[in-house]
Length: 438
Image (cartoon, rainbow, N blue to C red; front, side, top):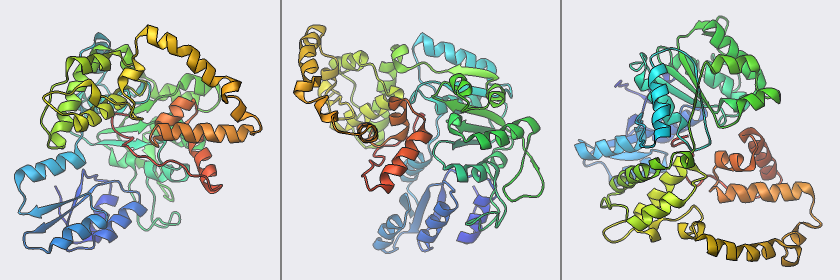
């Protein structure tokens, strides 16, 4: 833990690349200025305001309105501060599993974790690729060093270079001071390149050089900087196909893919559903101050029958809702809802019922029912726009999920959404967390 006397000193400390799980600030300081500075320089760290007892009650409200994630009264109650710290800075490297398919993956991870070999972690969206990356770091010889993650798909291409390699003061508009990049920040530890498949080809060449030479060039810098990091990368796309399509450099692919860990989808490891559901039920009961209810047999049966296209992330969200909706002594089937609020029973209807409903569905999709008729007279661009926006809305604004369903890259999706927004169309915004267990 490090302390400084003023906001400017705190910003200098964060720019130096030391990293921080959270930032505690006196409620009497200019919290809004700190939050805006962090946002403008793209430094991602939660800000927690704190103040001594007797401080005006409005100060806590003003702190939250200024952008603070939480407010803690001082001197702190140990239980309260523990809960807040856990809520805003929890990082777990525990992989919860019971299925033999997951056990096999963990066996491979344990075997290669102590090495410095680059690892490419692949799998569908929501399978837990970042959790696996943290597991590898925790089991490695670098566990005492930093674990630094950067989502290559979430940062615009023109900013990703400075995020990775840092920049010098005045290197570009908005570079108000020297900024240490993720490579330098991760020196001595592990750097996770999340969704590396979405990186621009020009930047791929610079990344390849950094991996080969073990040195980086800050944007606007005059001399290279030596770095010592272990690289882990994730992708939910088929990188071999991306190489064949010319979207990803073959030499970079081989440099990253020294070892490949493929995470099976949740439907490929059905025995994990129950243990994960129980884990999430307990977790969200505790975080919401609710009683820890067991999952009833009927509810568990429905969980087991559902295919979970959104994988572990979808299961986690479903259990969070179930904890909030449950009543009585256990979590019943009525509390198990899909993203759109439909009961799982609708998705797990008996075969006879499903077959009986099929003709009705076919009729609804027929031209007479208006299915194809609604497409007549529309341009391909209009149909594409409606499909993309409806899919994004179905995914609660989650770009990664929507891109995965649509079969396009998140970069393509982002470009389309930018176009639609500029044309005046309403684009759904994220309404649930996208970064848990990526």
